[in-house]
Amino acid sequence: MRGRTWLGAALVLGAQLRALWLAAAVEVHTAKEVVAVNGTNQRLKCTFSSSSPVSQQLSVSWNFQPEDLSAHEPVFYYLKEPYKPPSGRFKERVTWDGNIERNDVSIIIWNLQPSDNGTFTCQVTNWPDVYGTIGEVRLRVVQKVNFSEIHFLAVAIGSASVLMIIVVTAVIICRQRRRRARDKRLEVADTECKEKESLKMGEEKEPIPLED
Image 1: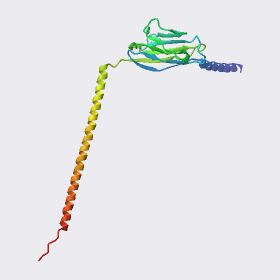
Image 2 (image 1 turned 90 degrees about the vertical axis):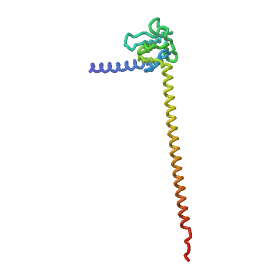
Image 3 (image 1 turned 135 degrees about the horizontal axis):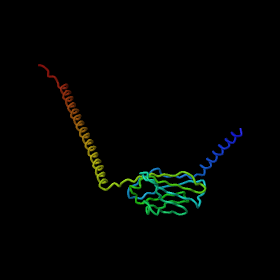
Image 4 (image 1 turned 180 degrees about the vertical axis):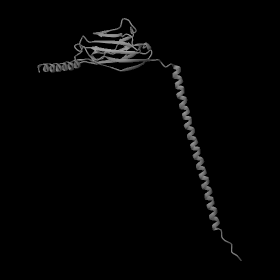
């Protein structure tokens, strides 16, 4: 019985410790996917929530996993102040855009390139909350639409709109002409009918001559 009692107490204690760990963990929130145009700048938003007040030991780590699943690359680091990467593809291309007081640890990536396609991770530790979720942002960089394509698209849409207006106008005109022709036929038929009735009534009223 004692063995079972100790086992039950251990299970209860483990559950309590797990619940306490989950309550103390840092939760990180990010957009799941971001689409941006090649050559533009993009803000990667990352916010967090912690059961403890923001401490001086709060740290933020941004990393990057390319689409080809090669090695992770450091992007940005924050500890009391922001630290830009000294080397790598994001050197001179990333800036801090967060506000620790507002639980915002976002960054901006400048001059996006197709090689920036991949997954960015945002990790926050706030002592004593040193464990928690890691936020992920999948970035897709799309090519610019050049002017000729935009111009062609605008011309195509404009031409289609003009053609539709012409077709609708032609249909309306045809219907009006048919309606007028039908009304005219009805008017002529009505006039002929009235003339026939007048002639018939005149014949009925004509006097019959008397014989000598």
